[in-house]
Length: 276
Image (tube, rainbow, N blue to C red; front, side, top):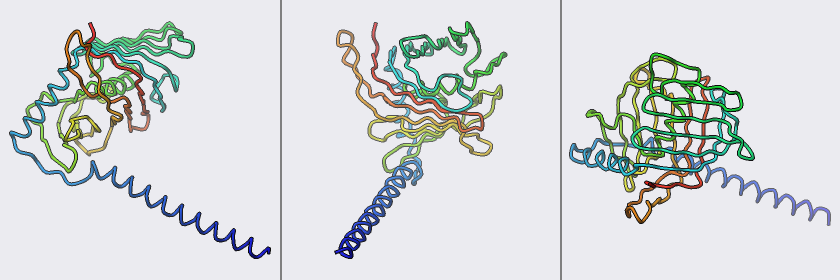
């Protein structure tokens, strides 16, 4: 009987090995499919079609006059000074007024961030520390500029803001499922340096939802910062004001790919659109 038991075990191991092999194949195919969405063949669209796409994106961005949100943040990397996980609140007023608050357990304030145009103020209540700097470069630079830029670009993606969208020289390409926008813009890299970047953005061809934004150095095409947007849901403005609604990403991940960079992932629980 012992040999029957061994044979049964051998058959079981064989079936498990086959199942694992198929699982690996399926995972590889899935990952390949995800990558091909952004790496496939893209062709330039006509001037008229390009203007239609850009105008639709601008209108989508203009729809958001105010936005309030609750989120959970997960951060990593040596370039991120905050705690690894915290809860937060976001308040935005168009075009560039922003307030972010971070809380530890039991509602203990951890950080407070205000942006008014290009000027930001960042404070840490527990340390009684307050820092003032510039989001996109200025005469004064702080050690927090790189972290602030990463956070701002994550929130900008939530708002549908694309750097350089107002420029005239924007190339629009069309793929199977997405449009790709290539924009050359002069941006600060968070290290007191102004240089040309290629802002490469992929948007869903049907919904115009932002899927991925890459900030590439024009000199060597190296990706410095990337922002991924997922889990889009409809958010409706209060009925007493209007019946407008917009699709917003409830998960956003911004990554700084430089040596001392880091990443921040925002998981939103709730949005309030265009409230008084």
